[in-house]
Length: 324
Image (cartoon, rainbow, N blue to C red; front, side, top):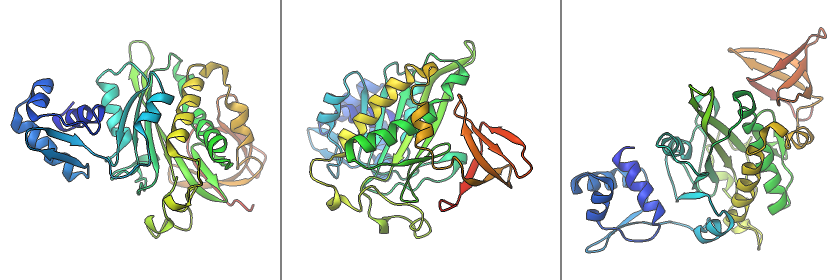
């Protein structure tokens, strides 16, 4: 772990508590100069780190979208890393996984400066969103572990419905839709244990457009994305992001502990917005049309082309006209 990440991790675990530069240097085994350089680098990335003479450094939050106290109460046993902003929760979580974290570990932020989606695409992550990465340690086979993305989609959609009373659909394989627009996405990355032939850990990244004003998104995205609530002042009384996050995480941990039972699969099918629809399949820079028939036991999409030939899609990307 490089020094900047180590400092950020330490300050995150001691949120709003001042830690001296000497303690940081001693705990991390580096020089005071290295600590200072790390602090400056973190500030350049957008982290709000306060410095007080004779007290040290403290990681501050710019807003109260999340409550550390509530999250810790609702998620006992989950290690929490909470940020106002970060470059990428998945990048940070992958580093924690590589360093050998053994408990379920949650990295959470309300904005990202370098969020990523599938296929290396940029994932717009303006203020007011829920951007989380959960490090899990499934004991499943490689094939079963690949179901986690689908389980995450169900967890997110179910949590939104339970907490916010808003029903979202799922576009295969990893997008959440509301009123024909995208409100969330999922990116799952695995750390492989080659000797055992299975994942040693899995990082599940989930982004939910919670309360981001429409004008905060890049102009090109505004026609195709939306938030659950159009700004922080539109969040109904009694609904908060911390409860939504905790509900989602509990659901996902439960599903991941029993992937082989596929407890989420019927819900995944029920929430699908593609079944019975005409779709465009995008693979290897080529497009072809088909109709989505069903979702099989491995959460793969079964399609049929115009000539009646059936095919099972294990990966790839599809587009759909929702009024089709």
